[in-house]
Image 1: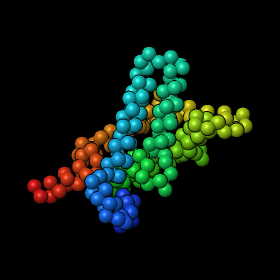
Image 2: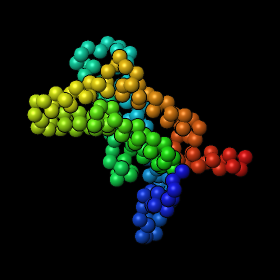
Image 3: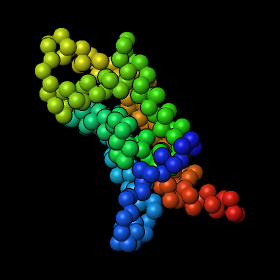
Image 4: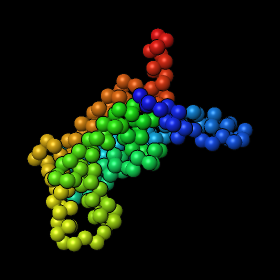
Length: 200
């Protein structure tokens, strides 16, 4: 659980200056922002997993389709796991875990992507280099730097190894689904289940 709940809670509360602000907050519900983070994240996360299963099963994918799927998967990984921590309300897995006060799980995801996979480069850096410099932007790179970015991304998507990004994301998904099964679909349901366990 979060060690500093005062700081943690404030990011989910809007500034309530007027009666109308308070009424709007009550209408939306105190868990509105937390639920929204997880709702947006989960829709995209389900789609990511479907794309990974399609790539792993290799169902009717020619080289062109395969490239599209893999690049889309990498963009999703960038969006869902590698957002700057200062954007606390973004729909990332870490944000979903923090919305439930499961900071240790969020920290575990950060540590997973911060681990070194190539000498001097973390998994996070390898994915961000490819997505930021070649997919969503086309940065100027010297030919040898471009080759290195390409070689690095190929290492983490190699389907012949178990330590590739496809299998890793499916393992992460399995853990997240266990949390949802145990605690509920969002922070509000988690609180309700916890209160029910405590009072039942």
